[in-house]
Length: 583
Image 1 (cartoon, rainbow, N blue to C red):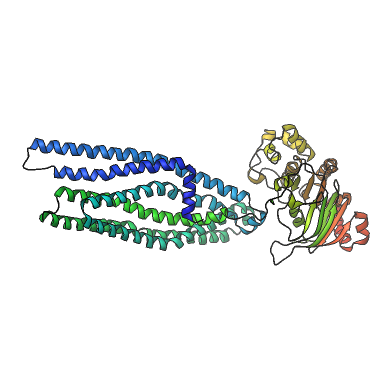
Image 2 (spheres, one colour):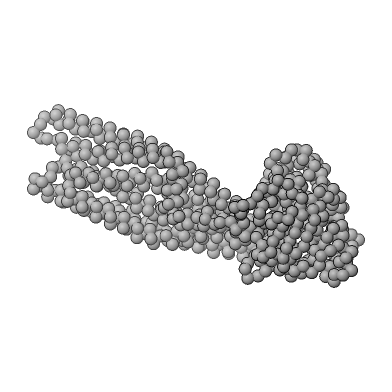
């Protein structure tokens, strides 16, 4: 789908208003074309052989019709613009909705490859850039085309010879518009891309403000901003240079056409081949031609500008998610939580595998702790279970069925995940806890908060559970954010619970209380925990040891401490660190 098809697709989202607008503009154009006829008649009505009263009466009658048809032109044009506003507003509304839905359905791999600032730019400023073509482009495009067509018909009725010259003039103007638009297209694309990079730079500086100040690299970031800002500035200036050529040229063309018509018309009047009122009518038509001709050329430039924005928007809309439901996917009515990973290999790129032939089983209601060296693939495994990514080889089964056979929404609804990086929305504490369960009651929210040892802290706040946490939870400490994210995972009562180093920011005493509360819940769930807490490791039913993407150990603590060198080394290191910290 190209940009023109896309524009019409969204225009026709309001088909009724689109048809009404076209009808009103057609009527407006008819009246617009009639006005010059009566202007010509006003001059033609002045006859020195008649009385002054007769001339004035003829003049007033023609003037009345000029005013009448001008008012009718205004009335129907305004009615068309109101319908056009509805069409353009709905078009932009549906485009925003579609791009938001397109981003929402994308897989994790899409966000790995696409910069956040570029996505924000495409969702906001690129969509804003299309408003002119959806609004002005529709109303003025239709109006200008109809008016030019009407003026050509007017010339056909009064002077066929001048009509041919008029058509040559119009075609020449449109060729000029096309030439300028062709030059502007890569410049507009550069403008949109540079603005996206500028947005991304600003977004990174805001999100990473703490790191920037920590390393005193404000000047470095400022220079990066200046570079992107200058690139956007240069592209904007280049676009104005070409854009500014069009309108002055049209004024010259209209002036030349007017002069030529006066010359040809004057000669024709002298030779008795044309009346004065006909010449005045043709001059009025040329005067009327200026606006639609300028607007049609301008709309072509607006289209090229919108095309650059829509090309970027279309990249998002047409991006198919890598992870989606199979045609024969089934809903989950009940789940026990038995997990089996069978010879799974995976890489974020095809060149490098993070996991290699990983296999293990976790029966329902059991706890699996995953340990390993840095970069061994611990977090990657837990991202594959809810199908955030698709395995490259092998399979993952839950309750003896390949996870690809389940509906995605049902699979993820039964898995509670607490990731390393906690993200909270700028909403109340209650809203954040209940985020995954829209019909959660206050009692359920309080129960989840008590489980994670948050309830007493929350009730000590002036607004309690209605307290807003700030953007990304900035008003909470690291430990409080982690506990809140655990509560958010627990409230959905998952059959599978995944905790990725989720208690690393809490003290030992708080962790003990959380683990004590979680132990009751974990009896009813299958739990996978990535942790460095030796108390959690010892209490796990099974322990999985990873090294460079391969399984190098699987069993209980007692088994592995005797037989697995890597496990013994990791365990003793963690034990020494935590003993030293406690002392």
